[in-house]
View 1 (tube, rainbow, N blue to C red):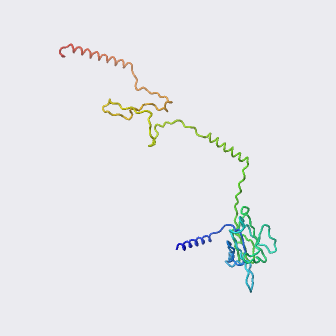
View 2: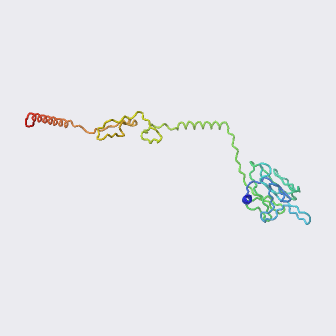
View 3: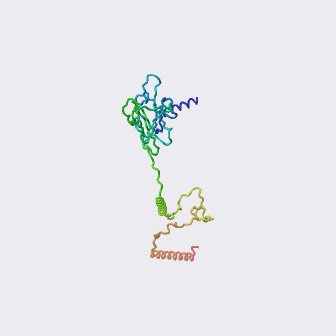
Length: 300
């Protein structure tokens, strides 16, 4: 059951892949007499693009005996390493082979002569040099011009050979740095280091941290032990506040400022003298009264 389910998943995946366009460049071509004997890793073009008919490129008319056929096969994995198909062309049988082109002279399965009057030639180019790459080849039996997106290579026995190309992007190799560029780079790095040193922020002025919130794990260690509370109290209850033993000093950060403390009150010297005069008279009167009482016998 598991094997059957796995096989079904593979079949579905293969179906999806077959529907999706394959834009990889073609790397090799072959010609066969029987499309069912196509070489390994090659796909035969045995149907026309416009009519879905037999794509035989030989089209030999014979009344008796076996009919010869020619089917074009393409591959996107075989061929010379790092070489791709760049262009196709159909030439006459007596026409000279263009420079840089190759041709199919024999069938791969039966070693028969490839063509009679016309030849299909192609040019391979290295991947890093090719300007374009052929990604698809189609054969048309009814159309007289290449479909949109395709280029016409030529016609063989009433069959149009068309191909689709794509541009090949090349990345320029990195240039070897010269000694002068290396020296300039080193100087630039040094300048950046110097600038970073100048831009380094100066240490901030000391800030009063007396009221910062301390972490719970931070243990305070007093510089001196707290004074013992007094054994007596001048108040009505023997209560000690939390401020006892804490010295009253000015914050050091405020020492650079000067303050003028206004007086709480002003003393009038004339009022003080008058007060002292009345106080002396009161004391003198009190003393005389006390002496008179001591001499009078009715007070005893």
